[in-house]
Length: 381
Image 1 (cartoon, one colour):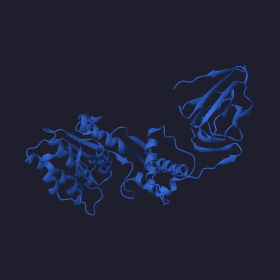
Image 2 (cartoon, one colour; image 1 turned 90 degrees about the vertical axis):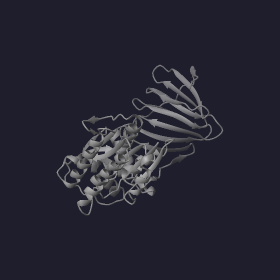
Image 3 (tube, one colour; image 1 turned 180 degrees about the vertical axis):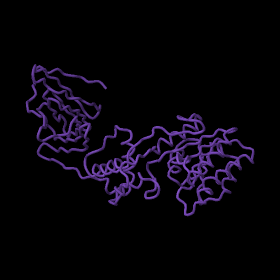
Image 4 (cartoon, one colour; image 1 turned 135 degrees about the horizontal axis):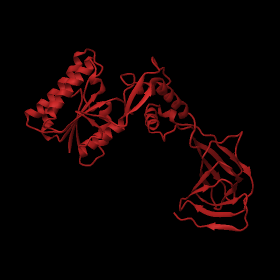
């Protein structure tokens, strides 16, 4: 399939081309403002699909709105019809098309051209909300890109109206939708002549600023945001794309003694924390229990024996694990437990705890495991 992408060097264009380039059997014909329309004329008869992203949104003169948004669209459609072709087309319009300003008017005129074209050709007019994601130009026309870039680089931001409501869509959701259209022709949401991207996110301007400010604090610490929330996951990924690479490196605090080393790795405010423990041969760690704190152990190097004993009835269980068959062992509450390095080399253990360590309330009570009447558990993957 040969796909023409206009506006190929723009924010959405770069992202859609990056995804199309990894698909087998797809050839991209790119067109951007530096190119002559002749490039389209020379290729149009071999084009199977068009993604029309080119447009003007911040011109020096308002006449450029009509030249870049209306006229280019008209020239493209006239060329297709003049050559007697039928080519499916996606066009990126804007929710601004309903507004009585030159940008909105030029977008609406382009839409009307496509609505007429749609009477005999597959046409998908996407009225996009504010788009955020990687590679968007900051300090231009995207508040998300501006906030992310400026906060990440220690620059000031301006919040004129904290209660201003923003409607946002994510770049990867747009890319996924456009590829779905190319492959199936079925938009996920269409109302009348117009298609829309889902999901759409709403957030107040002040809340957005506060959220991105919190990302800056997290990036320089062990904390990670609540990326189980789809919006926060996408916004955090966007923010990280603006952070200087040197600022993405965080020094960890090592706690070393004659047993080995222990380091906290990742902390979350809602889902506990991850740590790494290194134990020398023969070292036994643990011999304590928790009432609410739950842990999961994963030996990724070496071998170990894990024993846990019920603190009331004394039932004991043993499981031997190693790096040949990686297993995850959950330590239940109310069981005192230990882990012993049974190998001849260092044993590396990943630990997840369901809460952050609280030195004032550690929920860690020391009690040795029982070595009597141990039930040997032979785990299976």
